[in-house]
Image 1 (cartoon, rainbow, N blue to C red):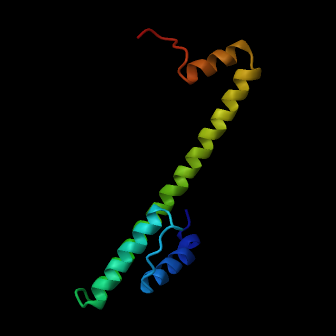
Image 2: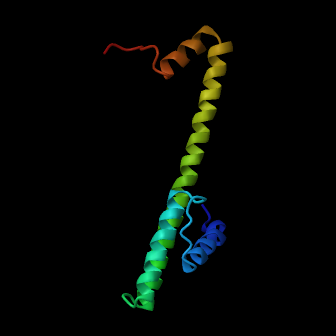
Image 3: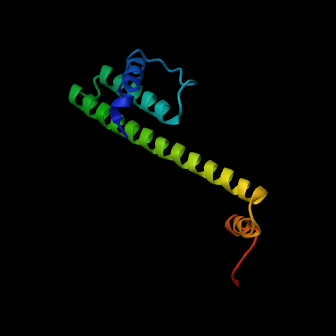
Length: 117
């Protein structure tokens, strides 16, 4: 995971927050949360409820959370890719594999039990 890959995306979201762009339909859930929370913090700053140090800290906290979200999303996407590959291989083994391979596939996907419950 390399957080530098996301710096441009975060900068773009930050600019949208400064302009108070509430259009979030092109964003995923993590980016929407970041944008709306930052807009909220900026509004609090403009109303002088929080000072510049507090908004700076809030922005850094939100960026950290967004980077964490991006990392989890990458891991999830990788996991889905691995699951799809397993499914592809198991389907192939069931269609053209030997009897032992087909039995292993049925055990693996839960259609056949090899133990006493």
